[in-house]
Structures are given as C-alpha cells and as structure tokens.
View 1 (cartoon, rainbow, N blue to C red):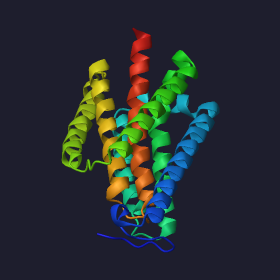
View 2: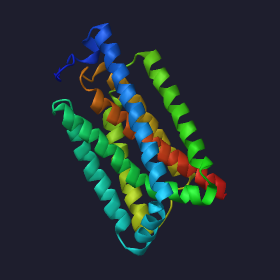
View 3: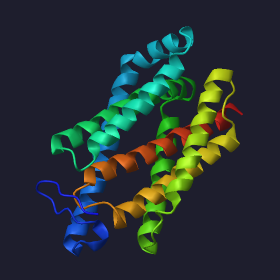
View 4: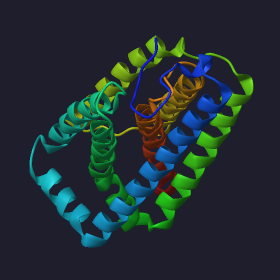
Length: 237
C-alpha cells in the first residue's frame, strides 16, 4: 500500500528509491529528536513552575483523578495518532504530534515531580540517559539485521491490553509496580521500539515521517517511564 503526502514521495519505504528511503528515515528521526527536546523543555518548565506539586495534591485529594488522567491520555493519544497519519493534511499531522507530546508531558508530570523532590533532578537525567542508550542499541540492531519484525504487532497489542489492565488495577486497588513488573514493561517498550523501527525500514510510506516519529516517541516515553520507576524503587530499597 502506498500513500501520498504533498511534497513527499509516497511509496512504501521498502520499495522506494534509496534516496527517498534515506530522506524519509532522516526526517523521521529528526522529528523524533525535536519531540524529545520539546518534551524535556515542557517538563522542565512545568517542574520549575511548581505545577507538578499542585497536580499531585489535587490527584491525591480527588478520588478517581488518576483514572481520569489515564482516560484522557488514552483517548487523546488515539486522537493524536489518527491526526498524525499521512492521509491527513500536513498541518493536522503536526498538530497530532504536538498534542501527543503535550499529553506525555502531562502524564509524566506526577512521577517526575516525585522523583525530583525525593531524589533530585539527576535521577530522571540518569534514567533518560539509560533509555536513550537502550533505544540507540535496539535501533542499530534492527537496522543491522534488516529483518521484518512486523509479526510482533499482535503480540504487542495483547501485551499492551494486559499491561493497561494491570495499571488500572494498580490505581484502583492501591498496589504498586515492583521491579519485576517494571522490568516486563521495559521489555514491552523494547518490543515496540523493535517493531516501530522495522516498520520504518519496511512498511511506512516515505511521506509518513510524522506518524512514524510519533510511534517511536510513544515507545521511547514508555521505556523511560518504567526505567525511571526502576531507578526510584532501587533508590528506595
């Protein structure tokens, strides 16, 4: 299947000319870098403003607020992914990516606030460095292998539904994720990074760089969240 976006070659990356495929990959990772930088900047500004502490107080005081935040993230994230698809106008694609970065900034604010207050700003930084190192290693491995990992899609989808159920249960019944469950979530994120990278090499159209970068950003953010949780649990022990 091929897609067309104004100004870009719309052929599937695997069948596109080398120059078109290389340009698509460069655009995808450039957009990912901008999304990560924007996320870091927004979080830094929110943490400095004190909004994170206010948000934590509200969420602990208002029953159901955690569930409400999760619903907002899931529904908003689905909307953002729809907007970012290449069949949408280019402006709407970028609005989708922007919306997703903002949603991630909101969902991350409570845990980053707790991590910063308890352990200092260096802990999120360390978790971020580890996340980027793992992401870089997985990306290099997939590109070097040249293999098609699209078969992971159904497995990852089922695992995502199970993990969402665990997260909801944790919020409703007040139990926390231990190292084992956090490790499994990091493995899930790694699976998504492998899957997304394979799709970028072989299945995305060369005009789908916005949607591709959003998918990668979501996977990297998931990995960062649970690596940070592992760091926090280890420090508490």
